[in-house]
Length: 81
Image 1 (spheres, one colour):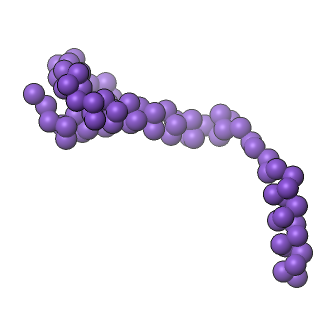
Image 2 (cartoon, one colour):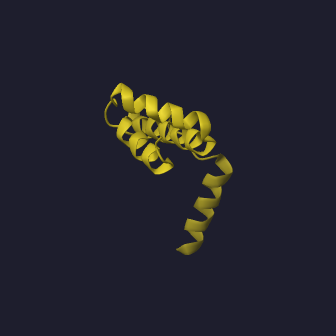
């Protein structure tokens, strides 16, 4: 059976290319028994999808500063001069 270190390495590889079915099966067998690896692999997938979204600037919504934050910045800038 694979070790947790092996599963982490394979999960990382899987973000770049599809793993052969044997390795995928071995990973899944390990993750049936190991909740830590299940969480790790899930988090790696979430991180990968987040990074994919960051690579496309159109997918990131522009969020303007709240008015109170904008006013604090203006006050601080005017007090420095």
